[in-house]
View 1 (spheres, helix red, strand yellow):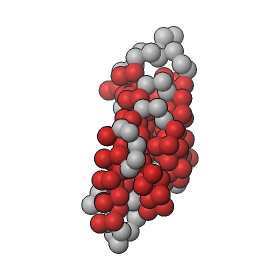
View 2 (cartoon, helix red, strand yellow):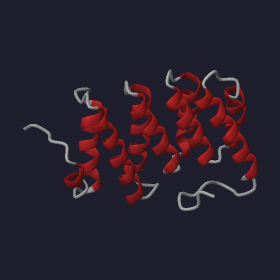
View 3 (cartoon, helix red, strand yellow):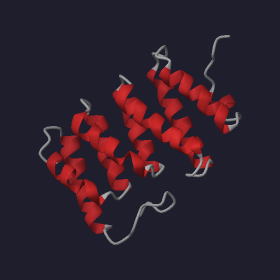
View 4 (spheres, one colour):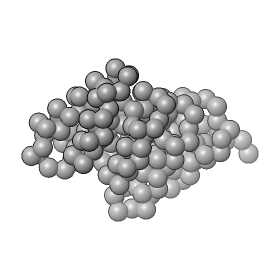
Length: 166
């Protein structure tokens, strides 16, 4: 049976079935349309909103985002994975964001991974962010400067909660 991607019907599936479909698209290596892979990242992020952070599905989604960061060949798709890590407070994946900042070839991915660290209010990444101030890519160095300012301003606000971005 051929798999047909239809995000609206996928939203009607229970979380486990939807995640299985998303994983099938992202990991089988056959889907060349990056817009479909991007949609899958978004749909996985929606699932993480619907389950508890203690649910194994949440951890599986966080692991999937890292898999995408390390394996997808498209910068926009990897960018979206970094965004979802920050948006959904996947704090255990901070080292993976730092790895993307230091090693990804795409300035777009580096930019979004830096923003995600800022969203997560990860003060432990300040040294990495300071290093990125010297990056040749304007989007990278400007984002690092922005996030460092934001971290300083929010230093006494506590850990990020998804419902309270400020």
